[in-house]
Structures are given as C-alpha cells and as structure tokens.
Image (cartoon, rainbow, N blue to C red; front, side, top):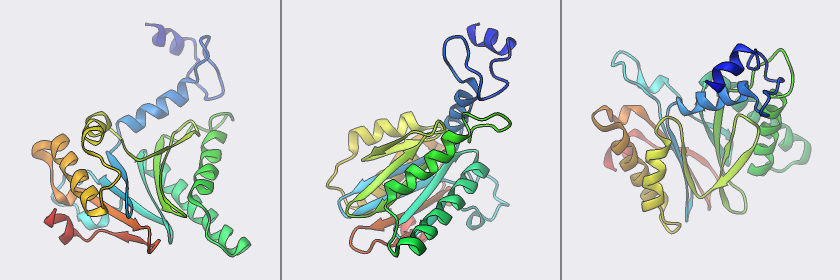
Length: 235
C-alpha cells in the first residue's frame, strides 16, 4: 500500500525525485528489471575466470548462434549483461571504447577495476539527471590483470567484487549451489561443470545447451576465449 501511495503522488515519475522515505523509485524499478533478466554466472578459478550465461533461446526457429550473450571487451576482459539487453549492449560498447582509448593514450591495457569504475560512473550519472531513465541492467565483468577478477555492476552505479556469483531471475537458487559447491582451487573446466550443473538444476526440463553461452580468460594467457559448443556437450 505504501508503494502504491508513492506512485499516486508521482514519486516514480523521475529518477531525480526522492520519496518521503528517501528512496529513488525509478532506480529500484531498474534493479527489479535485472531480477527478471536471463541468468548469468561468473566464477573465479585458480587458473583464470569464467562466464556462463543463459541466452533464453526457447524458439526452435531461432538460430541460437545468432544470439550473443557474452562479449569481449578487451583482449583480457569479457562481460555479460542481465536485464534490458539493449542497455547492456550500449554500455559494453562504451566499455570497449574506454579500453581502446586507454591503450592509445598510455600504451598499456586498462585494468579491469578501472574499466568497471568508468562504467559505474556512467550508470550513476543516469540516476541523478532528469529526462533520462536509469540503465536497467547489471553487467558482470571478468578480467585478468595481475590476478583474475570478477565484478558485478549494479543499476545504481555501485560495484562489488566476487569469487563467484550469479545475477538474473534464478540468482538465488544458483547462489545456493555456488555457496555449497564452489572452491577457490577449482579449475576453469571444473567451474564450467559447476555452472552447467547449476543451470540444469534451475532450468529443469527447459535446460538445453543451445541456451548457454560461455567464455573464459586464463591467467597465463590473458586472452578472452569463447567456449566451443562441442566442449559444452562434453561437460
């Protein structure tokens, strides 16, 4: 009832208007859109980092290979977006430009955390100016600098670093699996098996390898690599 009263009074008409109890309702709506988005998993392994994402390819007439869910940002950085995919695409393209500009300006690759902060600054900008809505997307960034890292950017413009996590509609169930099964000593192959097991559990009869997109970055190579579909079938 309290939320309905807020809406009736117009506190959700702009992202710049605080409700009487100090909430930005448009920003909270953006966070809700992430909870309804396709699920994605990020795992830091002993030999690198891994991303596995659900492409939600449920129509047999759709060419599954045409749906891209995990993106290369730089040679050593990858990302996946959950929520409004079109918002994620724009932000990931912005991240690519930032990474390229850093290389041209300084002659070295950008650190993953610096790129994450730059994208979070953009997200935060859209929570405090009228005439625009917040980005309804969370982005998982993985990268290998001195060490492998996994970061989640929130629609509010904040970020967190994780050893392993999930975002999207089934994040609670998958986090329960990760909390029970994740080990810092696991390899990328073991992490991939864990992620697929988690998706099998939450998707049930709807599980299909065509729905999954996966990529990894090994610590020694620092090179973004997509997981071949044939390898997914072997897990």
